[in-house]
Length: 249
Image (cartoon, rainbow, N blue to C red; front, top):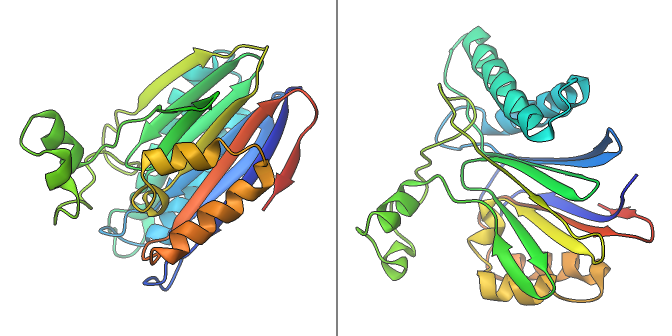
């Protein structure tokens, strides 16, 4: 089995009554499965949507016999989407429940991931940080189509509008994988927008490049809190290593 350092954290924002984020890490088929969800506050029961989605994804992934792990992630996302829709329809109010979803699976010399929403997966190789996911938001779409600049996008009133999320018909997740060199360590960072909206990529690259793995969590938490932590903030930090694994939570 591959060896990992794992650090994870979740907390409700200062303006929230409940934590609408949910996270999980678990070993499946001798690989590491990481799940992060951020319930969409514009819809109903976001804290329930994120929590039951994490549980459903974990169970569905573990129960699958699909040997192609990217296909397994795809199947799990569609099955979890059906589950969340049926769950919301069985409630008395039948109101839509949605959540962002990021799944990362690390096994052997590969990383596999699936993505819906505006939570993010980053990859640090050496001291270079790369964003593996693209935000499924109205703002990102307007930027790509040339209607907004990055500067104009900051603090835009429509910044909370998510175009893709689990719990909607035809979810259309982004799916990808990459080969990892077995001669070096690899760091991955999953986070909700409560982190990425307060820490820019230049800062994040510097923080994640710190040699002391244990101090990274404290640095991120302190920085988010110093900037108000209005939204729930959650993250999972993983390093694929060759000398054992430990977990901080």
